[in-house]
Image (cartoon, rainbow over all chains, first blue to last red; front, side):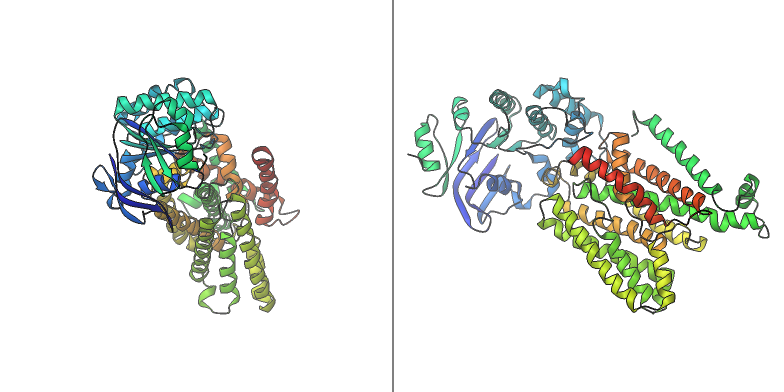
Length: 237
Length: 330
């Protein structure tokens, strides 16, 4: 789904290298690393917002840099860490914005669009808040609405920048469970950055760690001990 | 498109028709209803009342419609573009850029720049240049307040240059410039209307194509881009459209403060939606209603006291904005 070929990630200086890495469908990958180590930079490199210093990033066998903005909007959706409450915008209309890559110049929603929106609402389980304003629901509910919007965008890839950062423990588990089900049921490739190492270990998710010593992104083998992760990624022994 | 809000839109349109009618009947000379109909359908060029209707009342009302709706829509564009409810063509210095160029052309002494076309061209150019300047700063400023401060500084900067120009100019030019700077709907004459209406229609047509990106922009730039919105093109059209509105209105009606800032906020409160299709339509109606009522009031007060339009819109608009700040932003 996403392939990296000898990529150097960074903005004006190289932060780290990715030798060869393939991210597959039906899987959640978790990107971990210190603050400022370049997690968001990697997500922005995948969307093409930041060009990698060296190497190629391929989305479904096509290089990111050659994809048009419209193509990208139909292949990659993003979920940001904090979703501001927007006055006078209800959850359903908010989710409907996810259909924009498919609508005409005036943004008119077709019946198909409406169906996808309703399905997304059901899949995330937010039927009860669908008609409420985004300004009166909780942070956790807003994050679920953001996920529903990404689902409505109907892309094979979902990128999430610290989607659980502002959530309480219960909501973190809820979000990860929903994502895990979606990845399997809809064959999506989900890449999220997180500081919730414990939670991700509990969920047995594949971890991508930015190694501080070698300045390389490595995929950890399943069952890697937490102590090892802390040492390699955060310099704590 | 107006599902669930149709009663509101019918009500607003009715208020607009009433406001426009009251506006037509306002003024020092009272004119009979029959003269209005005759002036439109059966014009008699020797009838003074009918001439007043044709040459004074109608163009003034059309000026009110265009200035009110244009300022309201451009305020809405700026507020969504910069994700800031306190943005508007006036506070961001787009009007002042326009004013500076009008001052330059009116006080320059060149005859071309004193014609309608010259002043309009200058106003549009000035508006566009300051729009681009604000856009440039917006790339470098993350905080919404900083951008407003830069806009206010630009306004301060340009008005100092205008003051310097005023000191250098002759009495006659100074008088006409000062009158212009107070803002008024009564200087628009029929011969200018085709030009004004054409530019106004072009800008309004372009706004229709901004509905989709505007709706996406409420999620922020990054999310909008991910939804396939071409940000640079959107920003440029936004600034272009605002410049046409602000430049056009500044050239023919003078600077009019606070309409662009207050009306879009009022519209959002009344409509309770973020659907820009509805918001644009409502801004056009509410902006027109607001300016027509204000101008009717000015004409009503005329026998007692002459009120500059720019001052009255500020007197009403400023307290409303303070209310918005206290209520929403604290």
